[in-house]
Image: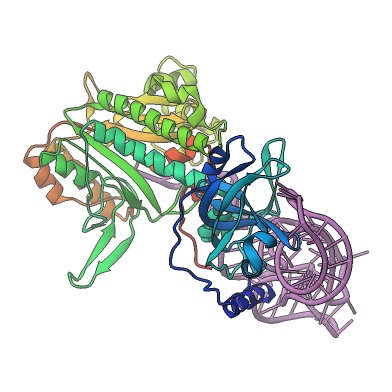
Length: 504
RNA sequence: GACCCGGUAGCUCAGUCGGUAGAGCAUGCGGCUUUUAACCGCCAGGUCGUGGGUUCGAUUCCCACCCGGGUCACCA
């Protein structure tokens, strides 16, 4: 696509000049809006003629008939039809009307009435151009078939919709509604945690050491300090420092950054919720996660319903909105899936055979715990549909969790799965500084051996822990993926306003 | 990283078994004072992703690259 002034763009420039010749300022400073589109139906009621309204928004449909013009004005609340009649608005204003384009931002003033076909309409008496659109928005034509909006020649190129999200939003009310729902979801999560006396905090994005997860970081450089800094891969270690300091319940919603591939479930920067609660173990956190998910689902459902977008997405599913969610234990669930009494009693050969049968790649090189993890993913996780807690992971798979009371081979850890995808991960958090140091040192050895995802020893964090860290439960929830799940969205790009993309 | 698919007008797409391309909508002009995918008529609009090769001739065939999508691999 050329950015040069082609004939379409040139036509808009010509109209701009024509408007200026008429003495119309094409870019205004403001407008005293008094109503929104969605109010109009109620204001008119059953009457044929209604009160005056003052509306502002974008011209989203335009049908000129000579000395009469119909248009639709779109604003955040919806859309309403406009009727311009030369006899009503006058010669001068009608001349402006004839220079309107799809996409122009205008303000109108006039009484409501009902057209012959029954549509609530503004009989425009005054028209103000607020911003001339010099580049055509990719509006598709719409028709209503059996109550549903059918869009023709739509703006369908997913790449361009992501790159030019402003245009995507401008022409797709349902995309706006989706992102409103996302904001409502975040708001509901905040309200939920605030209601439990959690404190929302902000911790460093730029960190001298990265940790709290296994991932490759982004590296940047601070000139004045003359040192590299890492963009955080997790919030965990700073939030737990705050619990040491006496903030018993803290949470943060912010971006983490991981220098990995981009696909339908991965964006290099993504929104993570982490929350930590002193004196709570993982069973308490399970209750929190369940209530939080229900609050999030309710908010999404309400927002989509308000926008007229009721769907069969999980946010509308009673099994999601009510709970309690089933809880299954990791080892028994795997044993049952493999039809064996106890998966831990299987020999290495049997495990490998089972893994191979499940389609796992590189079976020969995998350790026992990793084999079992692969089998679990294939046979259990991927088949979980309704939200389900999986609890008590093998110790080898959960280096950051405390051992399970009464069974040190397991850890007090749970993950929440739904539709085969992980929605939350949580532990009874490790608070033993001696154990923690050993784990850091193991990581440091891996890093020294070339593991890019291993972290180093965080001496400052150990110092904090040595002062005495209360026992606590901690949870991480990927907000993008949670929202994808609740709305049934298949691509993370579609739930992030400006996803990371290569420049054009 | 591997493999597969795609990139043609402002938008959505068709097409050329190799002879520099079409449709619908949008745009422009004319008509129309209750239309709603408005309608009727006319006109215009394209370095066919980029670079190279083969060829008398490439948008079409070949190679490389760029961008996007998908599958797989990798992955707290």
